[in-house]
Image 1 (spheres, rainbow, N blue to C red):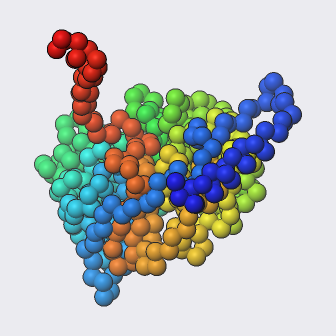
Image 2 (cartoon, rainbow, N blue to C red; image 1 turned 30 degrees about the horizontal axis):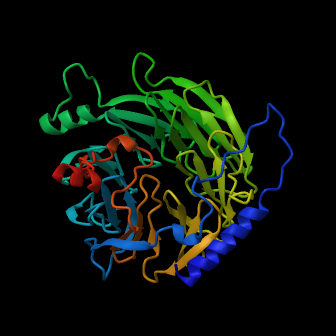
Length: 437
């Protein structure tokens, strides 16, 4: 054991011996605080594995004139979009370049890519482009009826996109693929757009789609939830009025139920049951404006405020997460949340340093400076860390000893791990000697 480990071990022992102060018992009907963030024993900070570089790759772009405009990821692919409209797809596990494609016209303004299990979609100008996310083959392009006001959300069968005419429209993927191939609509389909939902309010943030409903928030702060399919397709299920303008995109959380998390300009966070009639699960006073998307991992909700404070809440209770010492999980001087692993939260601070925070104690464990890697991916889908330079150099990091990524939002997409048979136990030496006699 090293001197550092002995020192930190004694410190942990001291903390554990002084943190047993009794608290007042809460009321029986009051929400119960969430348990400590992790169940690991009170150990030294070295219990968090060090970060190691998994791979490094280079996106395709003209470094003399272009820069990285957007970089996003899903469980399988990292998408790097240049300011000229070139999309580079990198394998999320190996960094291998899978394909590159010019999407839209050169230098046309594009929105960040979005994807499902097999398709990636990019909006460039007034048109929407769909490509096979593993090969880059264009599946279809479609000129929208009016200028899009935000990016789309794509499910396995449809996509939903807000338009500048203050409506949300949806199209079936199979309909547009048929139209692209045969230059006509499928039999029995009168138009490419399946339905439109008019709000009369500006929509500037991408919608979210659950199993049977799609939700979106307007600039006025009104949340609309609409049926996706069936006889009620395109009809409102409920409208929730926050009475204050929206400041951040909606976040959809799918656990035992589907929840919507919405931040408003009155500095409140709302948790709403998506499959209810707009029932509020809880609200929380944030005390600061929130513009960054909200990250949910397991039962933990992480919010980065515009003033640089990172706050952790429990998904079920809406109360602050408690650290091992009983203090709320909170951190200052945070610019963006990069990734969350089993034991740590990784953020960038105002100096551009990558900061490691212990999920159990809430304490800063390490700070690393990566001078040219200033563009992070806010990765809420896996436990990998992705950083990029403006010239398209992409680096992936992971915790040492974690060989396979952990899928936070879609565990069903995790690769099936082979089961290796355990060797039979060896016979005791005494029994072997008896047999020889």
